[in-house]
Each structure stands twice: as structure tokens, then as C-alpha cells.
Image (cartoon, rainbow, N blue to C red; front, side, top):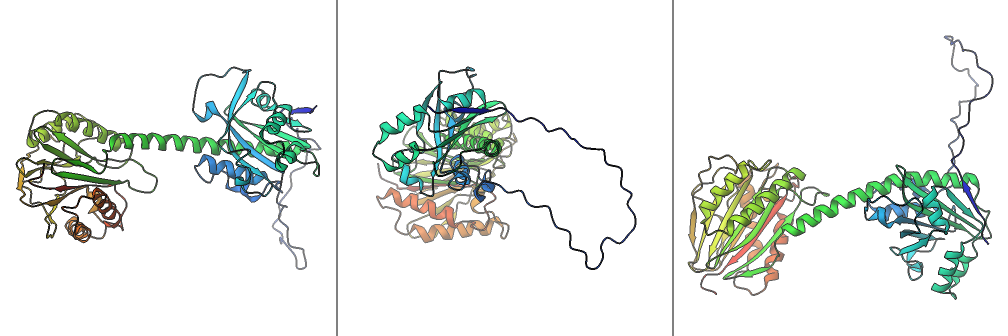
Length: 480
């Protein structure tokens, strides 16, 4: 039967020895010819591999877990694994019982010897959730917060591995472990998970000092794991918001096909102040809008969500484009962070073969007929940004007798530190011409989406300080 030893927190060592007298410093020569150069104090050796220095360098749970196990195996131990409690991983904040009948933990990372993780995936898959009863050393380490040191694999693990694949040579090697170390992971007094290490009979058993070293490594890993978990939670939240707000791409309506694209500013932002939407209206009409709330942080995203919701509500009413913009202006004035937002609204009427535009301080749309070239729509008035309460919004109506491509976009595609906005609009129009040949009149919706991706990648490639948003529509008169 495996024998377990628990390590309580170590005592604090008190200062001992006689009191030293004060030393008088004299203005004397610091060194003499022939004196040996002073030597730096020896660097403290660590039992872990250089991978330990990488812990916390990335805000990624799985990568952090791999750093931990690579720091431990194969130099320090034959096998190492990191487990996270499911309730902590899923952020279930209900207070845990002091002595639960069992714990559920997910295997975050595993390293056995110098083998690759794929060699063990069939037997000990990363991501597997295991249930550990109260009497196992894993649950005991989590409940008490004390390291568990055994002279072999515990009975629960022994039976589980034997059932998994009794003829596997790797299983046999694990079952012959002569020393087993389980170090709890705790953060701010709460259990997070644990680290498990094993050594075979050809190595010295784990010592008390080595257990303390793993505890220190685990304390640093806890902070890194918590940072990674918080970052992943915020990223999942932002992605969930964005996916719920973005309309389906490649949509087809009466005499109109629509594709759109969005690229946030920077590398890590996943949601900002840009928004766009496609709004079916009564009488074979279709509303399309691209807007931009100032900035691209969380506050701008909240303003964007409120404006987009307001547009959807207004589009459900039987009002014209000009009235819709006036009402949206009033909503923006009462919405924190939404003042000075800009937008361009276009309404395609398939029955009349007309497209009506109303702008609110936004760059003009681009229109391109079958023969090109793409040109900015000459708006009756550019209009003032939303939320000022003094907006003068007038419609601009185009009659289309032939298929045309319509591009609505945000200023992130045309503004640059190296050129003014008019040059950016001209550059975007030429990029639309270069990629639009053959698109009007085709039945391939994917061609529109591909053109969107191309425009996002090419436009203002030298400046990614603002979100980029575009909505591309193929308008086809005379088609039901």
C-alpha cells in the first residue's frame, strides 16, 4: 500500500549569531595591483528546465500548462501533468464544500519523458475530465492544500490505468513509479487544481526540498493560469457579442446579393465601435447601414450595440430613410458614448430600381456599374454626425438601369497617416475596380465574399489603428 507524507508550510528561520559592530568606511584605495577580481555570488541552481522561465509569457491556458510540464519532465521527473478544477475552469463561483465527496478536474497538459504528447493521447488525452473520489491523494491535496508524497501510484490511478490498457508498455512504466508527488495549486486561498509528478525506480525519490521547489513553481503557475483564464473569458465574451451582432454573410434578397467584412483595430481587439447591418423592409425594400462610434474599445462597442439595436427597431417601422436618420440622431443624443457617431444608410427598392442614401458625417459610398469605374456617390449633403440634435439629413436617390456594385465602408479603410481621406477613397475605388471584373451578374455569392476579404486586406494596409468595416451589395434591376 502506498505511504503518503504531507508537508505543512515550512517554519520561518530566525536570525542567529552575535551582533556585528558598525564598520567605518575610509577613503582608501579599493583595490591593489595583483588583487584577485571580486567574484559575483553564485547563481542559485534550479532543478527545472529553462521552460520554467516561459511560464506566464503567454495569455493562453494550454500553452501555460505545457510550459509547466516541460519545465518538470524529463529533467526533474519522468512524467508531469497539470490538472485544473472544472468549477474553477468554468468559473462556477458557488462556495465549495470543505470536504467534497469528489472533485472533477480537467487534464490541461501532460509530458512523459521526452515523448511527444501525441504518443500518449490515446491513453491520457489532454482535455479529459476525471472524477477523483475523496479518499484519493488528489482530492486530499485539493481539500487540505498540502502536498502529497507517495512511494508509488495510488490505488485509484493504478486501477484506472490497468483498465485503460493493461498491455501497454507505457502503462506498465507508470505503474512501476517509485515516487509520486502531488502539489496543490491554490490562488488567493482557493483551490485551482494540482500538479502530479512521478519518478521511476531508477531515480531517487522526491525529497522535501524538491517538493517545496515544485510548490514554488506551482504558485507562479497559478498566477499565469489565472491571467490566461481571465483573458480567455474576456475574449470569449467579445467574440460572442460580435457573432451575435454580425449579420449572416452571403445573403440574397430581391434583386440584391450582400456580403460584408470586418477587421478590428490592432492584433488583440475583437470588437470595436464599427457596426453594419442588413435590414429587410416592407415592399421589396432593403436597408443597408455602416456606422462608426468613436474609438474601438469597450465603451465604443457598447455605443455601437445600442445604435445598431435602435436602427433595427426603426427599420421595422414604415418610415422613410430621412425620418429613420432623424430618429436615430435623437436616440444617439440620449445614448452615452454615441454622440459624434457617423453612419451611412442606403435603401434599395427593387420595385422602383432606386437606391436612396442618407449620410451622417460618414464617407460617401462607392458605386460601380458593369463597365466601371467605381466612383463616390455625390451626396446631396454629407450630414452631421449623430447625437448633435441639429442634423440636416437629406436623401440622395440614384436610378439604376443596369447591375451595379455598391460599397459602404468605414473610415478605417480610407484614412491613413500618409494620405488624406480623398486619396484613400480613390485608392479604395481602384481596388474595387481591380477585383470587381465579372462579379456583377454572376451567380456565385462567394465571389462577393472573396472581394470583401481582398478589399479588407489591401485598403490602408499601412495603418491598422482603426477598425475596418465594409458592406458590398450587388444590385440587379428588373430581377425578382
